[in-house]
Amino acid sequence: MRGVLLAVFLAGATALATALATALATLPVKFGDALNPKFHHPRCLQCHQFNSARQQGRAYHSHSARFLCDKCHSTNITGLPRGEWIAPPERMDWTDLNARDTCLLIKRNLAGEDPAQKMLTHLLGDVRVRWALDSGMTPGGRFPAVPGGYAEFAKQAQEWVEGGMLCE
Ligand code: HEC
Ligand code: HEC
Image (cartoon, rainbow, N blue to C red; front, side):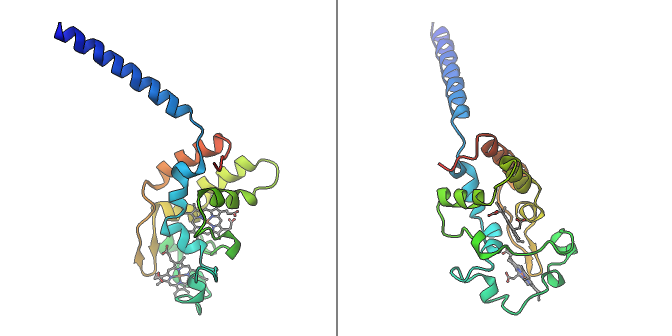
């Protein structure tokens, strides 16, 4: 009798877990779920705040006299093609922004034919994004890459873009 009860209970629990997993899987994916913490990892931020006066990015202290980026961040260190190790303009700095505002900022520049494809191409194909996810190597040594690496990030980015790039 106890065995039967246990079996019934287990079957019920399994059904419940399956129903729960399905419900969770169909919840809309928001930027804040998985991507926002990764965007705010130091490997992304250190470069994105490079030219930010407000954040006192590296252009304002350790790198104030360093211009030829490739001279030190060379291909054999970063794995990037020549000319690709560059920092974004200040308006692309999302250092202090919350998930919603970070999301709005990165969507702002997506005008054109196919914004979703543009976003996906950037998140999955940009060499600098890739460096932050899988390398972290600098002329001063290797800094920790974003946890989860490219594989996890690519999956999460794809889910978010396919879900309509929801900010909240
Ligand atoms: C070596 C510096 C560098 C690193 C590291 C870096 N980026 Fe960037 N990022 C750039 C530059 C430069 C641009 C602008 C040029 C372009 O659009 O391709 C940019 C643009 C972007 C944009 C487009 C922003 C907009 O407003 O259009 C997104 C999104 C982005 N990066 C995400 C990331 C994420 C996420 C990471 C970390 C996983 C990261 N970046 C790491 C340099 C970097
Ligand atoms: C003279 C050599 C040299 C030059 C030139 C140079 N860097 Fe650096 N850079 C370094 C060293 C060394 C480090 C590691 C120590 C540190 O964090 O400052 C570094 C670190 C960085 C980091 C921090 C990486 C992280 O994820 O923490 C960024 C971003 C960066 N450099 C961008 C640039 C950009 C953009 C340029 C060109 C405008 C540039 N660097 C030019 C030597 C250089």
